[in-house]
Image (cartoon, rainbow, N blue to C red; front, side, top):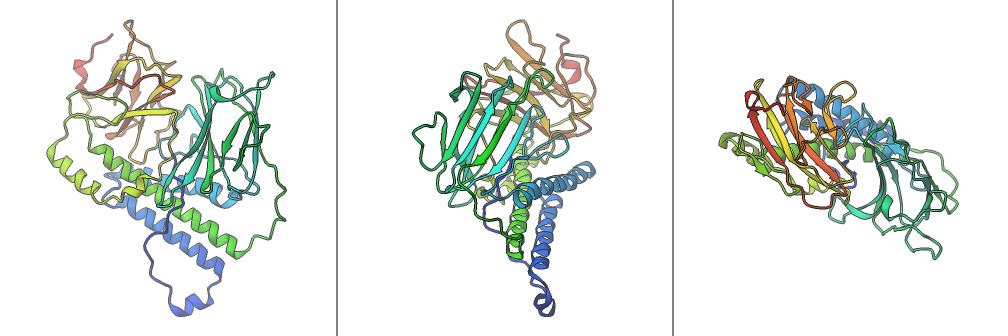
Length: 408
């Protein structure tokens, strides 16, 4: 899930010539700094952790613009915790850090010295969860609190109210503590069938009156553009870094079982050595920018497929509120699910009669149930996520020849 910018800026950049620096306005300096941040992100796309071919390069630069689009909403236009506005982070055309076709992600900024009230109706969406995130003192983020639908106290008409504050009011049926380093909230809504489920609608308000709104000056612009730039740099770096780690566990034909962590098969030694060398260059703090929810469980593998091969994902049907298998490209984006079948959830999967399932990833339709398309990619990640799962996952990932597939 998505990165939150709050870590220190990157390496110092070459200063402007003295004559330019003295005549440049603060607004222009802030904008030029943003351009430098975008250039630094672009260098990740074309560097050792970056694209390995033309498709990945094109997707990578499009990805940079998508992250920039989200950053402009979250950290420029809707960045005021005194007057928080909700941003729909991810859409069918704006994706980053493991988007899900079946999930809405709504983001808004927070500060610890205000009291917020969320009011909403449950609807019949498969899941809704309210997750707080705090910034770590050493960089990155961590979960600060979480309330899922099954934990909420509802009014007789099915509506609910959540108070977010540093101290719990005596009258609050639902409350989340705002700790000193609170940064934001993400509201997730999961669907098994968007055509039949209604979104849980909610409103957000600050209970204290905000101070008068000042003019938007150069200092505010500089601070917010700096936040935008850091978010883009760190998100692009995180996506590329996570793919490096995933490639350490690529499938080469031998099945491996999982227990909720990323898994794989045997990896060719030459590729493993390259991936390990890259992994050793990654600052572990980069990974702390990932935005998890405590209600989800993941397992997956890195795949590379020839035309006559497939990846088989199989195991017991996960005992979960929601589960799905989907693929990602190198930048942790789902391919275009508006037109391609690149994800399948537990309601869509055709199960076996013995309580297990099989999902098959291949370049062309192998004429078996539960086929996912590679969307023209020769490599990528495949992931199973399970929401509110009652036991550890026991999933197998295999790379096989198409001729080995049984029709079922």
